[in-house]
Length: 114
Image (cartoon, rainbow, N blue to C red; front, top):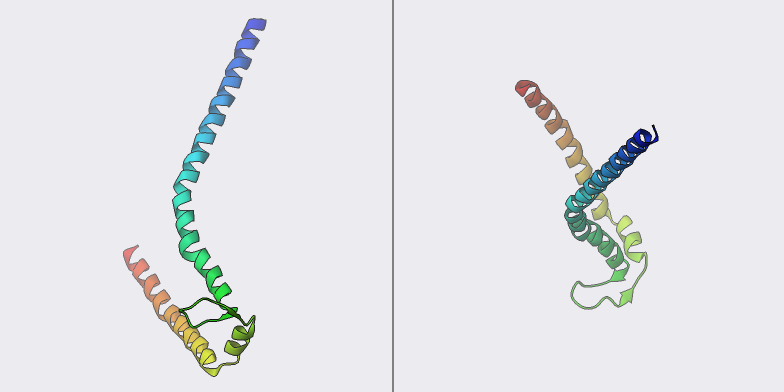
């Protein structure tokens, strides 16, 4: 009787080990597939955002080294600029008009296809 229960416990342990190995292989596969996309996203999106925020703290002509630190002065100046306010307003109008025209058109096309 003991040999039967020992065999069953060995099978259960082997099954758990096999399931753990399969799960680990799946996780490794997922990570390997996601890694190139995460690296590209970091290099092409996240890094430039932080670099632009860092550059905003300097008075810089775009060519030489950034040596003239001005802190938040650039951001204070742009928030008081009328041209910036007009640009933000134009962007908001463009976004709203795009949504109002494209969304109903896309839904109509989806209904026609479906």
